[in-house]
Image (cartoon, rainbow, N blue to C red; front, top):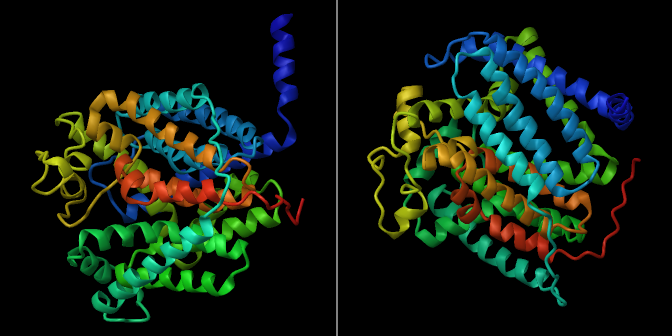
Length: 437
């Protein structure tokens, strides 16, 4: 009798929106499988992977997909920055990884699930906290000085190293990227350039929010000059995503519940493009590069480091104080690229599971997710009481950076500290209104 009452209580807690969220998430997974099997695998043949339906893993993955999407739907109702980060991590990392584990011959699913379980457990057990806000707000002054420094450094780099070109053809992107990696920028210029590349989108949102459109446009120009210099498509994508998320969450109430629709729709567009035009632009740049490749790389890192010694961060932060990695000849990224992509110049960087297993082995499956959850909790603290459309304007960039970069890389050199400071100092005198409810 008590068990029946518990079941009825659980059913009452699941409303129609939760059911729609779960169904669309399932559609996303189905489309993801089709695109991988019919388009990505035949075109970008991975000789280290074999298509093979592992029946137990396949059905386990489906069960986790349904349970995970149900939990994410409930979590998003809290309307917090951390719940949106968890949602995007689910759709961009967890769901693709458990999907691929069921349709290709891999052996790392249990290790990945341990990592994911510790991640979820830490998220639930580590309490939220608040940070006392400063009585005086100097954000406008601080951003003014930052914009001055960014302007000097970016314009100098663009003028000297990019031959002050104003456009970059599609076929020249990889040439510009190769040139950017060989340019000998000073350490300070390189650090400022990387930080500017990652936090200019939120600065653009700030000036848009303050209706200072001249500075906003200049900030956009600086972001474009960075793209012209290094050919990184992420530079432009982060700009469009930040502005798009800001406008979406400002206009539409509960826009976060459209995440599965966004991912399923993007995957469907890629499939239809291939079926109707025989082209795969959307599949290549969006589905494969953003959603599939990080999950595939997770397995490559596991396959390599299960028989090789972990690096213990000797190639990242510890090399700054004299430690030498045994992989320093090529570097870990290019070692993985050489072995699994047969290309010495392919720098295969990745975050989350790959970073944990590469640096700390099996211990990393316990330690690293806790560290990342702490970062997520800090973002939640610094964005407390901010309108959701402001804090979520940078959430895609945060998640993409976490998924594709090692912990100390994204936290120290990618401007996460500065991003936290900006969110922390952002004035809280704006009403969180949406146009469409």
